[in-house]
Length: 136
Image (cartoon, one colour):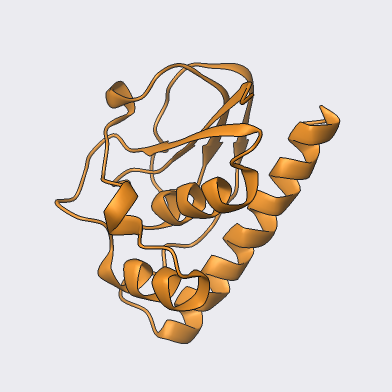
């Protein structure tokens, strides 16, 4: 039973937060209820992110995900902001907030995108382990 709700948020909910949602669902589906959202939304998920996540992990983000506002998701236990370099979205959370301080790879090379994806994957796996140990 999923008992821990996690939200990954950034301003536009089109790239880093969507990647984090996809990877957290892949690795933590058994223990996490995962959301991503933003204070504004783009019309679609970043197409470079969609392409690379599909290529690397076989996950079609456009099939099961869409851009959402923070008002579109339920209250969560843990709030993860991506590192917005502006004003990160604010929403309530039950236990803890953490900022991952990630640069937005939008418009950059595939190599830079993959570096960001790898960082997100590492952070997601670490988050899942901390949630399992209840040491968030």
